[in-house]
Image 1 (cartoon, rainbow, N blue to C red):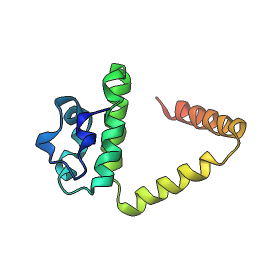
Image 2: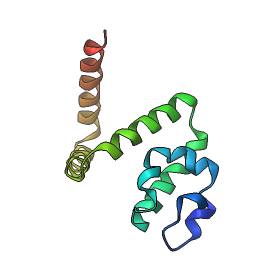
Image 3: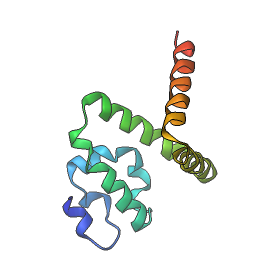
Length: 109
């Protein structure tokens, strides 16, 4: 567990480790204004970052960049979809994932 997580109050950006700063770079402009709970959630995600492959790191940063650009309403809609999807039986989820993959492949030139 990161030493940063031991603190009970929001952490300023400059107190994050270099690895945490790398993983959380997309949220750096907003970091010091984020609520403590959100900082802690992001730090938990960042703990896994060093173990990622280079491709997974790139995907993580890309998704985080996309996420921070969403409006609060768009983020809530994404959370709602995620929670609804998690209630779908596993075999049905896999079917939906496969359909999305196929649709994405047809869009790729």
